[in-house]
Amino acid sequence: MKKVVTPRWGWALTGSGHFFTECLDIIRSLDHVDLFVSKAAAEVIRMYKHNLEMPENIRVFRDTTASSAPVGNFYHNVYHTLIVAPATSNTVAKFVYGISDNLATNVFAQAGKCRVPTVVFACDTAPELETQAPDRKVMVYPRRIDLENTDKLKSFDATQVAESLAALHEAVERRRRELAAREHSGNV
Image (cartoon, rainbow, N blue to C red; front, side, top):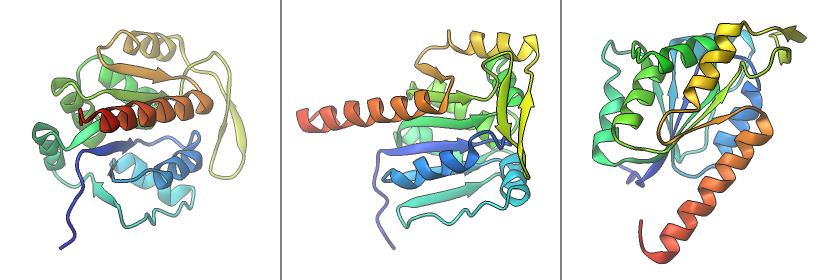
């Protein structure tokens, strides 16, 4: 059995097609990732005809248990970072109001309880957005409540909200540099 390298990246996918392909590309570029696939994300993978084949160093956990059993790894210091990308307005609202009823919301809650730095790539960040539907680009108009919840999430401890794909890339690269600096200084 292959030894699992820790600490690892945790990455949760939710049920949004917003930059889903680009998020999969970022995941594939990282070393040592545990990918948490919610039931809604599994539907998006099928609808958008995405390929979930991952490199050998990425473990995939699917939302198949009522208690989201894989979240227990947060209590064993398995993760140095959690990324939730893309994050639907539904997921963001659940984060803001403390609802943990699926794999993605449970990993977010456990990351917060274990003080694991988290990046959330929220889908609804502006009054008008262009996004990818299964067959074409479409315009969406987030509701005021969606935008308000995204703003509320910004106040959470150890949580950064990325409002664009570029901001997500920046957050991942910043975290890589922080981790490299910690490793170089011996403070892993």
